[in-house]
Amino acid sequence: MSGTDTLTPQQVEAEGLADWRVLFQALHARYRTGDFATGLRLVEAIGAAAEEMDHHPDLDLRYGQVHVRLFSHDVFGVTSRDTTLARRISKLAAGLGVTAVPAAVQVLEIALDSAQPDAIKPFWRAVLGLQDSPLHDELIDGRGILPTLWFQQTVAHEEPRQRFHLDIRVPPEEAFARVEAALGAGGTLVSDDRAPTFWVLADAEGNKACVTTWAGRAEGG
Image (cartoon, rainbow, N blue to C red; front, side):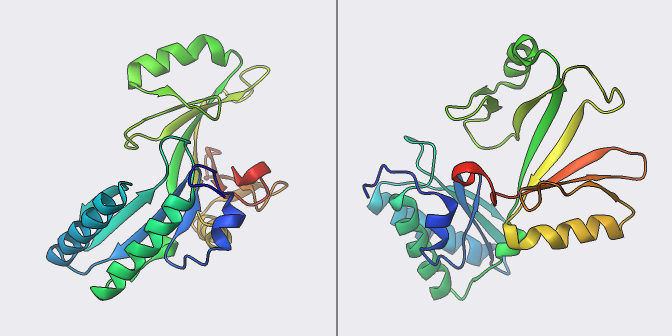
């Protein structure tokens, strides 16, 4: 397999990258650094490794933690370049005594119900400064800062009280606990027909949200 072949989540899991989880088209890791200085040292070490490999992750340095996102921009997916650098980053973190927190990684998407998604997509592309995804019929932030916006086709506006809803993508092993926490916090289960791909939940007023994973999707998308 070449460095430009995209890997499925199943193939990534077979790599045994304990610190990392696949969320959509990227590898994510969260490291608990304990203080800002240690986080900065980790970021500097990752930067040096990235320059050496000429393959650059997205880094988010905050007090007590560093979040790393790895994917190959040229193919918009995870490749062997990413798994190789992920292993290197894990070793660098271990050398600094930094611990990974896989359960903490998550990605938020926004869904908009629409009977005419093609008619409204240009507006949202313009007003949010997003761009078309090369893989799916959705709008993305190429900088990786704003959430992805996707359009859920509806025959009519069946639920006028809530046109937007949130999808939270978590690692498969974390999904059930997240669902149980939401139910314990006063939520209700609307549907688990597609679990573990997604669960539809609602708050006490009926506003919906979905807990989603890659499990059960074609090519793990």
